[in-house]
Length: 438
Image 1 (cartoon, rainbow, N blue to C red):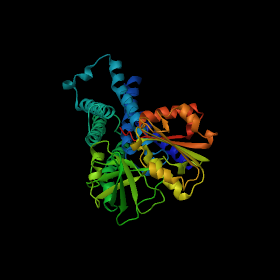
Image 2: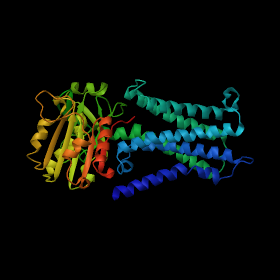
Image 3: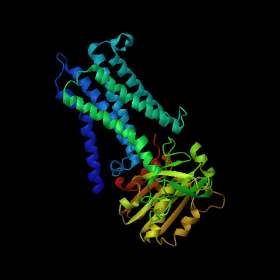
Image 4: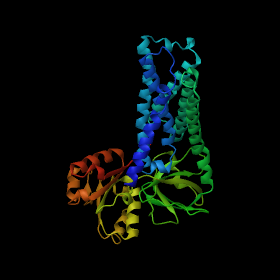
């Protein structure tokens, strides 16, 4: 209930702030001789501008805002709402073109600076969306994209504010000027928080990499211990942003789930598979290296959803947050029914298999099903893909009494979620973890 109330509050505040600039149009003095289409165009422009400004808050990782939803859900909302903001902003000039039945505004050499500001702001927004949606196709490395994304976001907002000031119709009254000044200060403050103040706080709370374990199949576990501080508490299944090699001001930081038990307070462990430039170098990290950790984040945890039992469905390295939950449940001495369905391509990709088998001694009602897509000849377990028929065989008799946690490749999550719904699992009981940030 607490998270529902918090979530409703932040969502309501988002709507209010998005619509606040409409007060500039409807409550202040309006220029004479302007028709409805013009005023509607201006109103849409202001709403779109406010939505763009709020994007800085959505990505700033404020824990009070993130807590009710989970950061992954907020970032997905950030992507979707960006498209909506773009369409609203695009409607601003489109209505003016339709009103005048003319494209004279596109004759930029003949236009005043305010039109240039608007045009450049719109182009920056287009570039921002294109480089985000098609980052993989454009072969942009994650760190390069982050620099481009942040720069284009600042340019979009700054140029749009230049357009508003250049038009000048809606900044005449003192209260209007105060409103725009406060919006500008808020955006700058968020940027300073992200790039200056927050990294400074990490300098006072470093971690040391004390162990690197080879888990096989290009998977490694980093153990990080706090230096000069007590670290932080987290819920099993949550994740954090990890910065290695560089200072906390580095643009190169990546999200990884904690794999260790939430009851273990002396260290954090992250299990990482080699999948890209950053992860490919993890095992070369010397023991004793400094790490900076920003967390915890996420709502993917059994601790948020009390139930008679839990069903965990993992694919490949998606076992990591689920392993944290299993270790934590074992440390609690939990006696509820637990079902783990762990799918992987080959036997060696079943990370933690030996430890999971050993956990049965501490979790008396843990049932484990391994599924291989490419099994060895002597494999006598499940093979193929997790589908409704397989789930129908293993799911508990009363599925609505359980909570379900899914983590793995995106196609698997989509198919397994559909299969769970086909097995009469309530959609509110299904929780999926996605790290597809862009």
